[in-house]
Image (tube, rainbow over all chains, first blue to last red; front, side, top):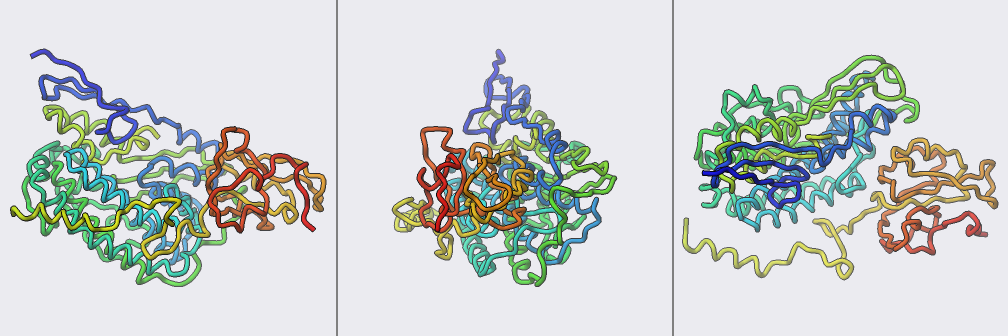
Length: 376
Length: 152
């Protein structure tokens, strides 16, 4: 049969953002796929070299729109390790709460987006609505809904407001009561059972070689989680399970050998529960004290010469910041290791081959690609 | 799988919708607390008499949104006061953190509608803080130091 070409994106309901995939098709089957990023390139790494150390905190959340806090945390940790700062215990706990709330809101977006691509349109509506309660919490804590600019080198910018713990617990109770509804809507739905297993399979032996991280790697059966292996913030004191498919996804049917859309989405669903668990522990055990070190004048930071790498576990995978200082006013070089770069370019081009055209969008959403982070 | 299961969806017909009908309904969080709260980072307010014109806010601004205009009828030695360009401002609040007199503040007010792009560059005054209305009007802000009349 004659081959033909199809462009999905940059403006298409089934694409994860400003991003395009150029498909060559034979009938309904994808013969080859080519990722075309570049619609969101803003040159963050270069911009950071021209701004003061403290000013960069306002810039970096924009690297990942659905989950901006991981950038702030990774940058702050890198700067702290260059400065040799040890941040207060209370700041570590507040960071944990913020990062986990951000993870839940990013997972709700990802799961809702995936459900939309397989035709279950109620799920994205509900999840967007429930995500709004988390954005309300962010607004009370940080003063902004999406770009929080809250985690600062040396701690966090403000202490939690009065009664915030109770409100967090109330939102967590509410979300936990909603999880059962999500299961009925998506995870125990016949449509999901038929359209997710064995679709978009990443070969298990190639996953590490390709640089797959985060829930996508855990769906391949590896229990790799930066929160456990290289604990940051207050994760060392938290009691939580690293979810890997198929060993630790209790209560869900094992319909495939893993590495596929089904495994990736089920891992995210079970991790929602773990995040709720972590937030409850962090709120209950919040230590008293200061939330930030006494920071020097933001216009004249003396960062010693050297380099540092800090990494955090985001909802998309491992996020890393490599920061080089030559002792000057600005960073000499900042490199961002984003998870979507590997997932969105190499992995997607390989695993889309041979798939059905209707599965292109679900595969992309199940990998949870974030185009702003591909281009940076 | 059960044949009755789809009918469970009917119970949602009698539930309250998620959507908030602004401005007829107030936006509240899960406990009924109205949002945005005081901590919200919206438009600036600046007490022009308390401000000393140190220009630190302009130096710390990551978006270069703050410029200065000279006021005649203020007491301090330096007569410059900040003008904020809301086409550039990213509402990070670093200018407020660095302000030595705490005259510059961010308010929970965030709505400004104007057909003229020049209206988004204005001199914030102290009157912007302390009003419940989320929208600010053109009469509350200054576009030129000549419009400023110090209160008694």
